[in-house]
Amino acid sequence: MLSSLAPVNGQAFSGIVECDDKQLNINNKGSRNLNRKPYKRSSDRKTKRGVSNDKVSIMVATDRKGNPTMKIAKIGRIDADSVENTIGGFFTAENVLCSDSHPSILAWAKGKKLEHHTFVASRQHIKDKCYHVQHVNSIDNLYERWIRKFNGVSTKYLAQYLNWFVFLEKAKKSSTKALDLAKNVASDISSIKTYRSITRRYEDLLLPQLSKT
View (cartoon, rainbow, N blue to C red):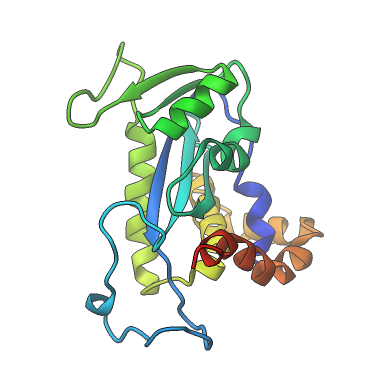
């Protein structure tokens, strides 16, 4: 069912678009082939501060019409290619981008020839009364509160949970959420194929990291 929501998570943006990269700890929940001792508590995890190869980067973007997208970019720090591969296809030359000053997002936006407004959260929050990143920051906060109820989600299945969250955000104003979900499940004939490719996609995600060890 969650695989059938993939088409919802990624649609053409309109007008001003805000984007951000988000880092999550790699989670091997449910795996029986760990190359380390399983964590009994969250404090057992010893990860590096900031962005590292212990984390997976998520690209988060939304326009002002309530059209969010959340896609797994890569293990570790994002680059211009991973930005393009996740959200690039939903932009047109007419879109205006708002983001922080991440060098990879800067390089990608320059290559796309987008009008781009950047922000440093500690210094500036809004430009010209309309350019800001408040909507994408709100999406980040809503996701963190929503995902907490699952007590950890395996990185292997993270894409499906991102699909679910985006669907719920887009369906907030709908009075027929269950019917909307059923329609998506029934209309996506490729969902079984997507579901069966989860393991391969996860292995592809980990491949660059494994090649360095």
